[in-house]
Image 1 (cartoon, rainbow, N blue to C red):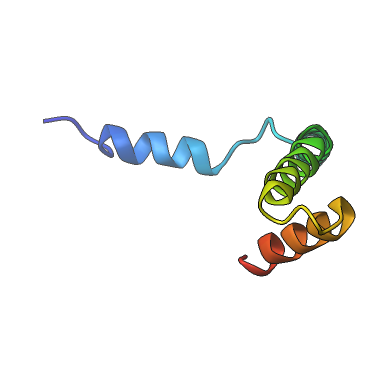
Image 2: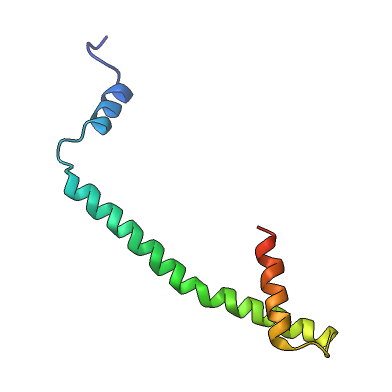
Length: 83
């Protein structure tokens, strides 16, 4: 029988106290996370507008007397109210 703690207790204690990490590492990781989030949001914004436009054009086949801008506003409002 071995003395000391079991292997998963030793592993957990190593993860809890990490002396090589500094505040600068944490700040860099946080900044990188925010940059990745902004890039993702900017990259996906045009897809949302394209989906609204596509739905408005499809709806214009059903209601040809309505304008495309009006239908775009209706589609955007109805999609945003679902969330």
